[in-house]
Amino acid sequence: MTYVIAQPCVDVKDKACIEECPVDCIYEGSRSLYIHPDECVDCGACEPVCPVEAIFYEDDTPDEWKEYYKANVEFFDELGSPGGASKLGLIERDHPFVAGLPPQNG
Image (cartoon, rainbow, N blue to C red; front, side, top):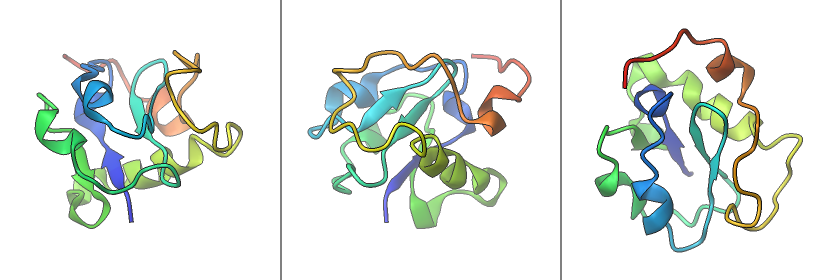
């Protein structure tokens, strides 16, 4: 199990969750943030600090945002497990599902 970042983060990317994450597993894409499912330790520190309530425990993700689990996992297909987001910085791409969304009001 892991945490998932869903639609409310798209085009907002507040990053309070990044500062709170003790294992540096929240990566920044062009339009959204992504939690690495293999690096996340399920501590939940990110969830309460998200000002737009975009972070959910995998099983608690609302039905309308269930596809974001797949987007969070598949975002790392090419990237692998770099072992920390801070050393990579901004990754100039998004999962195709997120990239294809219309601009979100932040």
